[in-house]
Image (cartoon, rainbow, N blue to C red; front, side, top):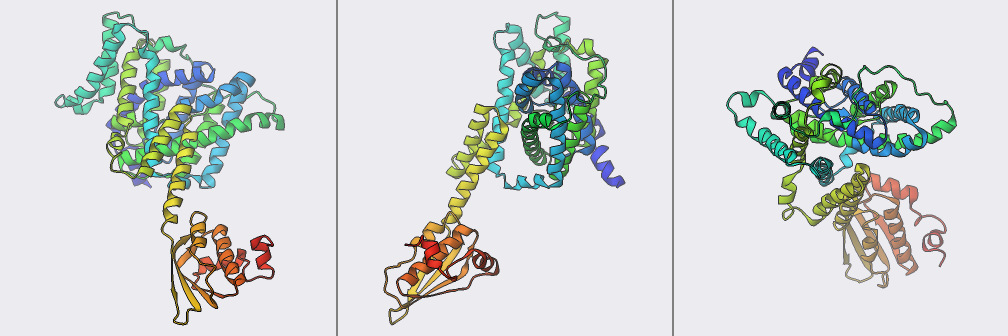
Length: 496
């Protein structure tokens, strides 16, 4: 127990403290921007980011991952806030948390194993593109100072680590933010700052039960939004956890992460915040800045509120160009450049899945739709590929009256037609033996195909013997097959 606490909290104190500070700085403009997207006051997003980050540090299943208010979730809230107001948003946030906890107990986090690597790569690349696109408003219709500051920030981020000794001690994104803020203040440069994004809160969040009627009408209003928020939140969180797993070469508990996200959202809703989930951008910043344990997530949440309440006057003067530089660094570091280099090496189906996932996510700005399309495409390609591994060979005895068919491979919905077409029903035979020793029947489509083959041969006057079914195949054939039951021919052949 003590060793676990040591590993998950205090095994990387200096790195976690510094990384948490960097993440807190990066969270502020994002939380404000996402609040504006959702149509609520900036403090709603800031309170949510504070509450979610602090709670998930204790309840999450992926140490070192950052969760807060996110753009993907904010997009789903727009209609609810516009039509029904903030109180219904808070109620929807609470219900979102309940649904996510339920998903954790149902072990839906385990479903991540059905998401192929090509889909994850597409998700990552799409998110990197969206992160970069989100910075473009800060780089359009601006003075040359903004471009100069952004370029200088990128120079600091990428060159500072090469400075002897100190370059390895301090995270370069933090150095970038502090340096550019000092320059902007000292030279009195007229440039957009964090303070221009919106009014920062001046008090800690307080307990706030949503002022909505507790009846079925309210449930009917918020449930569709809560279900969507729960799905998108879990999807983005689990995908981000998988990415952080790869970056840190450590495992995570996906089902615990589902429950943790639910508890965090309930906490946010009760403290006047909106629903949130894991943030890939901030999680990558955290890892790249040296954060590894739960302490980095806790520090990010606490320091976020400290910055807002104590250092707000300094905070307002941070130039947006500095934060844009950090986010561009994140988008560059997040994008899987190997996926471009490997386009010629990887199978065409893998490339199609990856590119389609990227295109759909970027086009819709909806991670759930993009990943859903990617998973569906990957499943179709997989089913098609496995279907080709089924073959049927045959031999005939010396008299020419008995033929033995041997089926090898997987028989299911994708290979069922090929299975049927492998038999010659017009051949004059007295007996047909179908050897299924090396075959496996997976679904009722496969069972239906076997029924058709057996009954067609019997209609041609041949005696049919099916042999060699393994236990699993025999179970599904016995349960759903009709070729050995009365009136089988009529039922399977449509009575013709």
